[in-house]
Length: 410
Image (tube, rainbow, N blue to C red):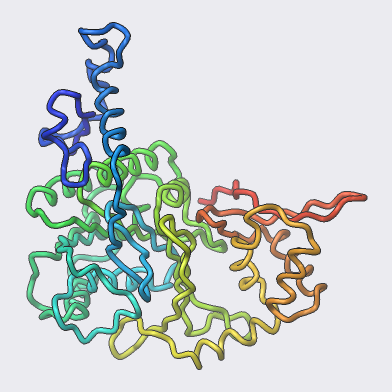
């Protein structure tokens, strides 16, 4: 079991890892240490030793120039995933969440020349990774092994030969109430076998605890993940299902994941004619803590390779033009997160949207009313799930704003 203990002031200097984080060899514990309740012996007015060590670490790092680390993964030259962060891929059932994650794992596993088109994603060539794929859904006789073979193949490696930098692990044999303990044990073991940067995919994260609607279990999981990325050379990529009928990640776990994540990617099929799913797949960045969110990445599922591939501009235009003509509610929802950073008067918001979609202002008003009445999820600039509210009062301008969604779905 991984235990967490705050690092005391004594020996602090030789327990910092290369990133300036406290890293103890004896493990960590959430128990409150005795030092926390004892004053320093030389001055009754000074901080307790454990608190002083915490303050000193941050102040020492804040007293010198900090060079921001380079991203682990870029998309079309723009950083999207950084070291020692929590990252999310979310989407509805059957939206190819796992295939997108497998594409990223194969990118990090690839060595030298590789024929795979990684759809604009590129990795930091200076970092070696130990990749751990932790699965909770697929059987261990066929489905999960095939996924591992697929990752090897995309990475340009022999698909039937194991690789020491790709480790598969399944939690499917553990009862749900024991899975978090099993995950902690696995991570502890992985940290001992390699000095490479540890990149862990959890597919799916809601299955790593007993009940994804239990607040205390969700908090325990993310407290654990947060301590790991703070104290160790570890990065997490979490896959999570969206609630049926909404774009919100599932339960308390989904909400906590959205709050803690540095990057949130949403993958799903774009609507085509008659509001049915088309073959066009969009990867949208709902949150990017370290920079400006990239434009959506458009893909499709390539049957011959059973993997995702870049969509042509012709395919993109053919699907999106009809939606733009109708000022489709989904397309307007995608714009509101950036347009409503602050509450906005109706005339201003409606004008911006009518110009963008080249439609009449009454059409825009109708679409905004639909979005508010149907309580469609709108992600703000921080990746927080919100709803559109319309405030109307006599003698005052109608105002549009985003408020955090309070709906908890099972």
